[in-house]
Length: 114
Length: 114
Image (cartoon, rainbow over all chains, first blue to last red; front, side, top):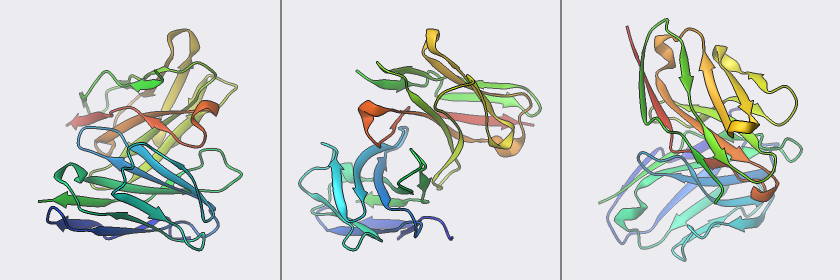
């Protein structure tokens, strides 16, 4: 068990470019979550998967954001046409089905849009 | 609105002194309550959680928290702070109305002076 892995750790991109982040959850965890954390704030929920099904999306997740978990294992979060307001830490967490809120967080991907 | 308030943005304590970080929540039903710690550039680590039962909860690293329903509070305490406790601390709430997601407070940054 190597924990939740997120790549890349840091990403600097120009405004208008597309970026994709990857999250590899703990292998036996079938639930996967994406949160966004801006400076001076706590994490805010973006979306949640159970296996490959995306069960909930926050209204924070605009049309420029898309998340997938194609085989119920790793997940990707893509942001199209990045804006400076997208600069944040993107956190992934996973949990087992039978442990309520049994989150394990990854170390996050820090996105800076210039 | 359902929310979590951490009134103190920064707290500075001397090493060896006691610590209390405040958390107030607004939630209609019985909440599930959590404290997480985040070191710079890292993900979140669970310190402790309250679901039901004994209102005084023990966690890792010598931390404890007390659920007070009448005050809608879940304050985090430690009797003697170590320099390695310097980090940001987040209170979070979950429950049936939130589904599987957590709502986080804005965090309290703890500085420890020697």
